[in-house]
Amino acid sequence: MNSRQLLILDLDETLISASESKPDAECDFTVYGYDVKQRPFVSEFLKNIEGHFDIAIWSSGTTDYVQAILEKILPVGIIPVFVWCRDRCTARKNFETDEIVYLKDLKKVEKRGYSLSKVLIVEDNRANVQRYYGNAIYVAPFHGDHSDIELQKLLPFLIDISQAEDFRSLEKRNWRAHNEKNSAHS
Ligand SMILES: [Mg+2]
Image (cartoon, rainbow, N blue to C red; front, side, top):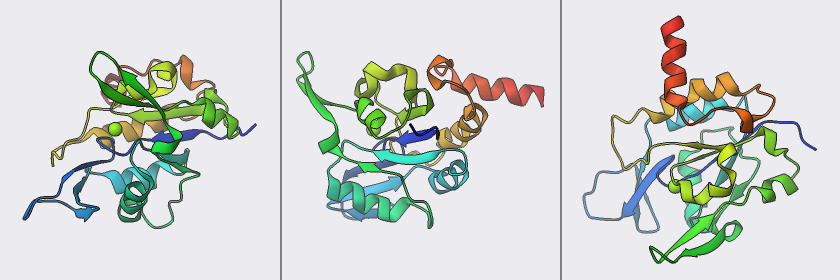
């Protein structure tokens, strides 16, 4: 069993925001007909977190789309331990909303040799990781706002908890408050 800490990152609305391409739309780049904006600080976030966690990407997007985006946003030298796409998610229909939910079943990560006590998944959509809320950190969905500072706030929190014995036993719902508490002491 691997004792390394693993940080799994969602893509859409967590690290980037993509919308159907329009002429003259303001964006960082375009892939497969989508205009993509990077969440502010994404490159710094990845470079700084890398020494503390193994990094993985798990998106409910298609493989081509995910690969094209990662080619643009991953800083040189940052190599995820795995990149998983929609085919690794478990599709379930929500009969109330009629929408398909792409569940990320962390058992698959366990099979890969990581202990779930050392796995965190950063997500904007709670429904995707509902069975593993103990491993989840929820961020506000990113829709392209230039003044977004979610990743700046998330970085010190993740570094602070990176050595914890079991991530599942930590209170993570109020992670923003954790930062404020710490900065109040310094
Ligand atoms: Mg998402």
